[in-house]
Image 1 (tube, one colour):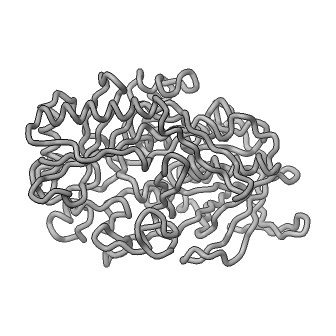
Image 2 (cartoon, one colour):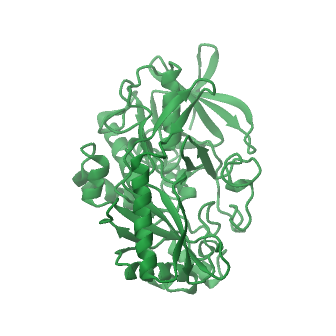
Length: 494
């Protein structure tokens, strides 16, 4: 696909038809829909492409951590490198984000869950209609992603004893069990169990990628389908740092990175249609900075507001069955407590690290909740960057802590000998909001108010939570909705 050079002012700019920033869930869907509608698309991705190799050594593991695990040395003790997982430090909270072709789908547990009507409405209010999502966009997202629940034969294998134990413990506590869709090819997991594929999923790998190829990350599914059209070019190690308006186009400026994370140069691209899909944190930071610097001065007052973290809490319980902890991944069995007296919650168990207490088993889970969007981003002129602010002492955060402690307390009461060892919300896994649908953007297509041809289509659109379930399905569905509606109205230059 040709990219035409042009000259704007003193800088040489590559002129492209349609530009997408980010290659995760939202970016992949956008590329797929746009390419199939006949648009030529360039996708800018700050990270690398991680192709699963037959040798089974593409990704780092928790047993062998190196620079591949970490974006520029954040989050884990590893050398500076353009690895797959970033820990972005905010004020009052830090957030995990993915880096690489496939974005967050490379590093998350790949859980897809549709929220209930009531909890969806609690999260979105009147910003988005549940019937529309349930009847159209959720089924389309499920079809694109291909997530399926853990099969019984896999769950009943010795490798998944920890998941079965959690299921029994939850039933004793009166908690309904859920088997969510998981972005995993279970046939590959069966091969791992049989010893004919590299053992990775069954060893608990997920956070840094799965070396067997079992993970159905979007670079291998939706984005691969987009690239197969011949209309999509994905440019890696292109870290976007600025966007401005020039004539009837947007000019996007990138730092060109080496694999070690050093800046080796810059590049600029011009497009009449730009779709921002860099995730809640980085899409919002880009726009907050552009507004403060006067690059996009018509952005409204809602840009940077209504941020939340899906109510993320993690906990570790000890005193459970002493099975080996590094088995049975990724997260695959859950339980719900929607009548919790403090806040509706979903628990998703996942393989834990070795037990902190010798001789006692360990069980860990992430808890997602309803999270009012009380966080925000602000511009720091001294660093020329947008910062995330989360009021950790707010009653909202305290209520989420109480909800987690309440459900864990009931688990422990129903399973004598178990106890809470640790819980925290300091590291969020599901950043949501910052450029919210119907507030900073048009409600139908994510078009940024004040700027025709500029769209936000990712998790930045979602105000804080997605109905007490992980957000990947809603993010995918909402991106599909926005891009499809934008195409229906006609893109600039179309």
